[in-house]
Length: 292
Image (cartoon, rainbow, N blue to C red):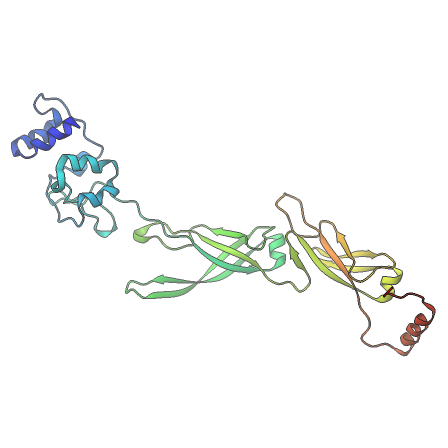
């Protein structure tokens, strides 16, 4: 800091300033002065200002560790030539081309959208093409709407509310900066047969009264295809039976949830004459009273 203070004083004198440019802080003794990195390229053309738009105090945030050095060395006048026109901060000393430090291009913001997928795609994974409507600012200040098609890879075991990341598909970065990411929030489409409870599924299995009374083997649809389910004799409507490993994949590799099959006793919409006679006969001979 002592050397910097001395350098500040000598800059007031053009002759001393020239010596200082050549020898640094040790201009009196002929000692060398080690300038900061980039000094030669940034100050090769002298100290002529280009008519900078910002003061050195505003530029401090842009130039980090160099800002204090420049302020102590040159005061307010020294940094008045800095310019950040065109989105990047640079130097123009003595009519030369802008050179020196450039700000890093700003990355675009990440965006989020929603996508609805089928239960089968969520369970087993798939690659689907989705149409995404986007809104981007046009050069004239208006908003330009467009639709772009994106290929989305849906990993197996995707659950309701999970997010899929599409790198570089978000908002475009200003001044050539990289685009942000796009996050798709997953919604599961309502399934005609299954209800989702975490990694487990629920389904309803209709059976006839005599199947519930006498027992039967019925076909039950699962995500993997139909399987046989044994209904024990005297099974009441509402009883739930579990089919292990017929649900959705879990976070544990190779593991799946279960499928819960709820028995529903269903009567025929119309009875034939013989069916009616049999039901009447059953009413006469059976002592069963479901209300007791």
